[in-house]
Image (cartoon, rainbow, N blue to C red; front, side):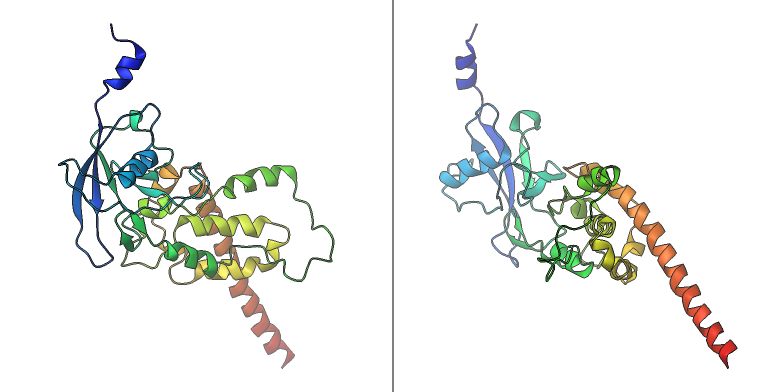
Length: 268
């Protein structure tokens, strides 16, 4: 019987099929690679090995594969890609748990830069549109801000785990190159910052942004987003909550303006 060391040594190479593209306007093509097996190997470490020795499965020298990465701890969200048909983080995708050959593809929701690297600017633009931040400029001398109740802080913390990885947008059928839908992540961030005691000062502006073209009305309730979110963020709950808030906001606008006209008419 082989020892554990011999078993590791005799392990077959890990097979990869990588969808490659030499530039934004290039044609996509597949290239196969084999990487020596190591226990607890993840997809990122395999890509690093290919970068160190860029030779494909046919033994031909090739160009290193492009991809994004940062923390390697599922915090930065940069290493998102489609692995065996599922959008996810490549730093937490363990080779031992994946069916081979492991197929790596770039996310199709975003413009391709090269190979597995994409431009997620669309997502960041959506966050700017909904003002997904707490404005604190000029408040440095006002002392500590108001405290959040503990029960609210707990669910708000779950929403704050979003790392703008783009996986939820990739899974959403309503986010594509024919749509300007901002996607579930930005909608959930509106809920987060509107719940903040200081962020609530700009609550109406964020709701107005959600009511514009490309906003919450373009959500088709497919619920794919919550299935793939690597942080388990309750995205569909946030979407439902924001649907209620935007509906209430629209009623308040309608009846408020109606009351204003009635008052004006009475004064005359």
